[in-house]
Image (tube, rainbow, N blue to C red; front, side):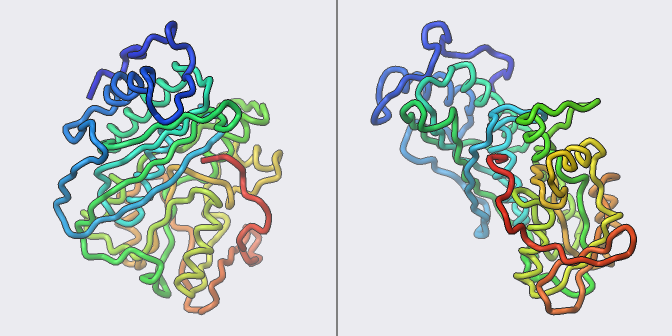
Length: 342
């Protein structure tokens, strides 16, 4: 990989803004591809052709795609570039796959500062390097000013599955336990606090991070995993509801076991949000037999905790025991979820 501390390879003084280039041609677009994208995403699979040719050492793969439209583009703990890489890497990891290759598509708005684009590209390269994946193909389009809000990014990913476990809601069984990898709500609240101008004694940073190595470590240690889910849009509550509905079980959790940062809790109270529904970009749940819980928690680290259990009831409901012992249903949100947080 190229040294990550190099300056923008295209002169910002000469091209202070990305110019509209209909049809994808033009000198500037060619410079963007050759001097920025090919430089930042250099790897052995890189060829200037319409498709990348890849070697897949297995007959079982995972494939996913996602789009990122977060606003603002840069936020404490991350930016749209690192979010795009980690989000797609994590989707592959939730299938129990080892992420290998990513594609990236940029939708750029006319007038976007070149240094803004370069910051995003650098962030993506660094995130890909940390996650151990290669960006092997991509596309760039420019739209009229006012039609793109800076940058939109689409990423697709391919990973390999090297185990025989069926990691899916259909594998969830009564008496399984639910483990949570860490505290909730930091990504969504980091963005909303920035938008609303909220200030705290310490800055709330997004939890945006790749999760594949941790998941693969669980699998390498022969942990039997029935289901995995990263807690992105809709948060913990939505993820649990989706699993309970698909598996046709009741999932029961305990409020006093669910960690929430004090500043995040305070921001949620100010903004009127429930941390259970706030998006995360570096948190996941794993549902597995109780006999594997202790070993799995040791591997997941000190921030991980057991928050609930799968009940035999065929209800498709998620219920929560409050700190005072009352039980309530945790349903899907009936209103709009947090806008533009991923």
